[in-house]
Each structure stands twice: as structure tokens, then as C-alpha cells.
Amino acid sequence: MNPWLLTIPLAYLLGSIPFGYLLVRIFRKEDIRASGSGNIGATNVARSGAKGLGILTLLLDLGKAFLAVRIAQHFAPGVSDLAVTAAVAAILGHVYPIWLSFRGGKGVASALGVFLALTWQSSLCILAVFAIIVALTRFVSLASIVAAAAFPLFGFYFVRHPSPIVIAGFLFIPLLVIVKHHANIVRLIAGTESRFGSSKNSRVTA
Image (cartoon, rainbow, N blue to C red; front, side):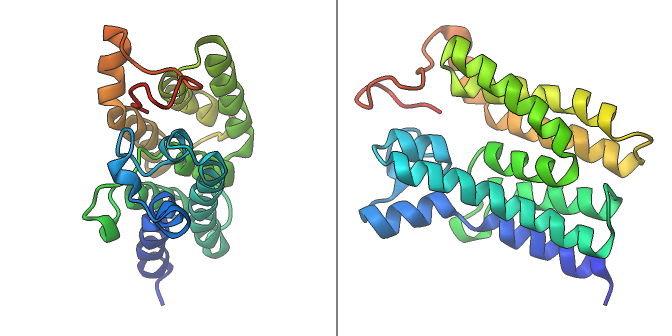
């Protein structure tokens, strides 16, 4: 069987698993989409008062995307066109999950998962960027945007002679993450974005 026909749909379906929604529904009997920003990602889960579930959501969202790329790399080892296309499919699955009427998360944890599978050195670099921005500003959204924007710089440094598909994937994934933060960007400019660690009774926007 053609590995493209197997791995790309599988990557999308893996990415589509809405762990944040499922965990909150199972353990708190609530719909995370009705809490805070309405996002199903780890930050909103944690800010809803379920920090443990937020951490678990982060790990599972990262893990599903990592697995999607690793499956593709089983058929085509290395940073190949198949692996990068699977990475894009997994991120699209998370952001536009078929199970939730194509309304998902912003792709930050899942993007980190695919970056770890594709080029772990770049992932360590953007993790450092993320941590520094959060420490300085306590804006998770700003840290996510800056880290995403920084990924191509590190990705193209550590992955030499990338193919056109690899180049496109390395640019598309960060761009999608940034676009999904458009509302946060507006609030950052307006000075109304919430900081991580602020009272859960304050407006939650990440």
C-alpha cells in the first residue's frame, strides 16, 4: 500500500483527537468549550481550574502529533517529504478536528510534538525562546507566537538542503499557529490580554 495513502489520513485523525475536551468531559463533567476562551488546548484547560488536566492535555496533544510523524518516518526515515506532510496533517487535525465540527485548538503543543519528531534540536531552541518570553511577560500567547515565528530560523539551520515540501511545511505550521492567535494579537496590542497566573475569575483569553 502506498505509505502516503496510509500515513497522511492517519496523521490527521491522530491530530483530531480532542484530548482537552475529552479529559474535561470525563473528569469534570464539563464542556471546556464553555469555559474561559472556549479553546480545547492545554492553557485553557489549566486556567479552567484543572491544572493537572492541563498538563495531561499538553502531553497528550504533543504526543499524538509526535506519533503521527514517527509513523511517517517509519516508512520514510529522516526529515522527508512524507514526514513533513504528516506533520502538517496532524496540526490541521488538531486545529480543525472532524470530531468537533472542525473547531479545535491553536496547535501550540501539537506543533511542538511534530517539531520534536522532525528536528529535536530546533525544538529545544524554541522551548528556550518560549520559556524566556513567558518568564519575562507571563503572556503564554505572546510566547507561543514568538516561538512559532522562531522555528523556521532554527529548522533551516539544523535541516540542511530541505526539499520544497519541507520548506513549505516548516513555514506553514508556524504561520498557522500564529494565525490561530489572531484574537490574542489584537488583545496584546490593545493591552487587554490576560497573563498566565492571573485570577481565574479574570477574563481568560489564551
